[in-house]
Length: 148
Length: 422
Image (cartoon, rainbow over all chains, first blue to last red; front, side, top):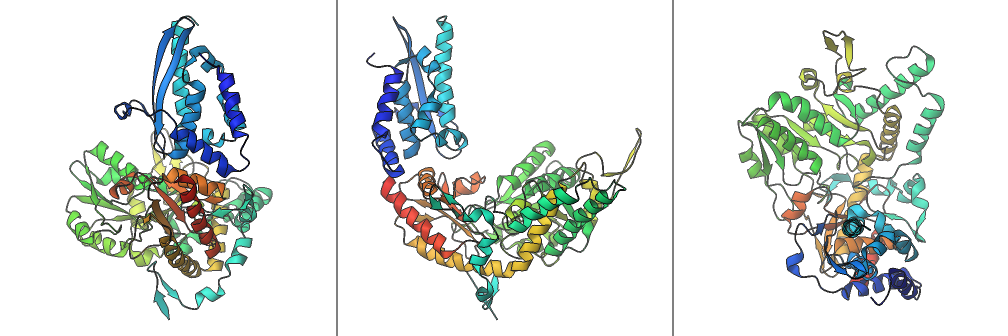
């Protein structure tokens, strides 16, 4: 693995630091969303849908076991451009990381530093919080199975 | 002299001149604040309205000077609280032009009012194979309680359809009121579309078949005057918090003879005349339906809200908002890709729309960053939103304190959303 969650978070913070206005920050966020690896439409099932009142999020996680322990990867998408940007942030932070690192990382802190924390409290609207829960749940189940 | 406006409400032509919206705004402390460095533009009134100082002060004063429980104290404060509470009821009675104080039941909100009727009147009168009739534009509050009742009783929920403009198809209403119909539940004004329903006609149709009608006035009560005697509705509900009053207090109006014959909703203190372990004798309406200590300060606040609205004049508010409606409709038409959802001929105070290619949630987020509060989503009315083939809308809704300048800010915000999100 090329980098840790902390390194990826530091990178994101560095990138967002370039922007003074919310307009630029959100434009960049949506750019990140556009670069999110596409999700197979066949995976946009009811089971993979995170319930949000206003925008929809789909997430399909998988785990591969490596010599260093279980690694969590996932594909995700949203019908809202802003939420998709937030999904891309989570994807960049979490996907391909060891289950244990995912459980230990404080994502709320990161979102606050990115000045995006309001979206976390708006779970009923955008399902972001539920998505984080799903990722952590997946990571936790692996950590338990491997005796971690 | 009057003119029929977009809202379909007759308004005196001279009224606008006496309505100084900038003075009205000064009565609402919250409106002077800035949000994210921008002046607050509050266009989420269909969700809840802001509170005038008169309401805030009345509740404050109640707690500071005459707080006590009602209907049971022999002391001075108790009597003061009693008086304040029953004065609140009298203000509501006048506001709705109800005949008797017994017809005004305090509940938590419109939702509770509808549930109360479904669980009392409904459970007595609706039997297996019977029908409950609602419309395709109801808020979930006027769908789910009836659905629960129908499920329990093996009855059927029937729905009066609407056309592509968001107007009720009256011929269908006529057809759907059958000998099996036990009650009709209809919104006075759609929260998702702004449509004002011809409830007078629906009530007349239903009454011709001996069917009572419940009117959901949650959206209409703060936009234009309501006269329950003129409407001849059997039940009517509204929420205090949309009427510039506090949250947690609402009103169920019911015709006296109907309320008298209905069983109680909840059991407890204050709704009884006598209790033994063998038998309880229930109190008379409205007390029969007000078990337990009610939201006394809420009633005081609601009374203050009604006084405030009366001092502004509901007709003046209606014409001010009709003017904004006309102006806003014109201005919004200029925004490329904007599709108005709900274009009924009689419509008030709601702009529900989509912007081509943009997710309503994203539009709402951009507007929020500009200090503009709107609601985005399905507005607790999934069926009617789906009826228009969209998954969600942006809804800007008006109150007595909104201005043309705020609608200009909305339009600017929408242009900005298009620039940023496209």
